Length: 48
Image 1: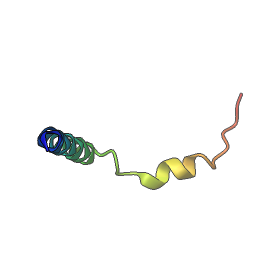
Image 2: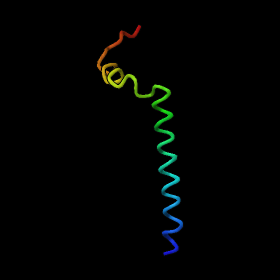
Image 3: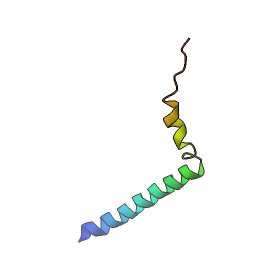
Image 4: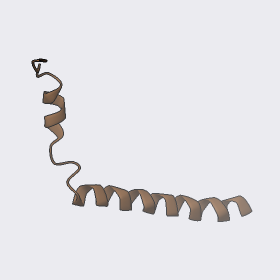
C-alpha cells in the first residue's frame, strides 16, 4: 500500500509535465504544418 502512495503522485506529476510540454508545443506552432514534411519527402531536388 505504501508503494501506491509514492507511485500515484509521481504518475500525476509526470502526466502534468507531459501536458505542459504538449500545450507548450501547440502554443509555439509545432503542429501547424503536418502535411508539409510528408510532401517534402516526395519532392526531388536537383543536386548540383
